[in-house]
Image (cartoon, rainbow, N blue to C red):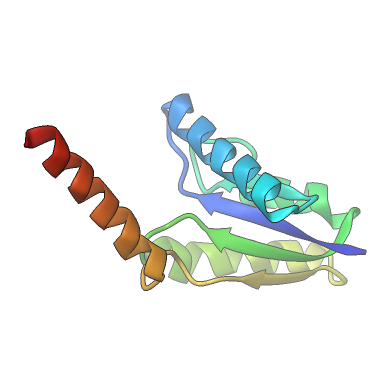
Length: 124
């Protein structure tokens, strides 16, 4: 079996924010040539992480959870491990890994510089 990927975000009561995360997950799948990529949410969006992992359990043997969070805050330190343990107990054969959050990634500085340059260009 193959590897599935979950882009895990906080979620929002504003559906357009959740839809933006789904669009990022879809673009990740397209650019990466990845067959199984889903967005999942801690709260305020569907599916939740358990739902996304449950849906993947029969399709893949390994899931990589990619947090769509900037820093390793309380949700990633407390909530995410608890959620993953619940799924692992229900699906002991499913390997689940979690990547670091987005901070410290070199592309973050490039994204910030891009935004700053755009703002400077609009002003000038």
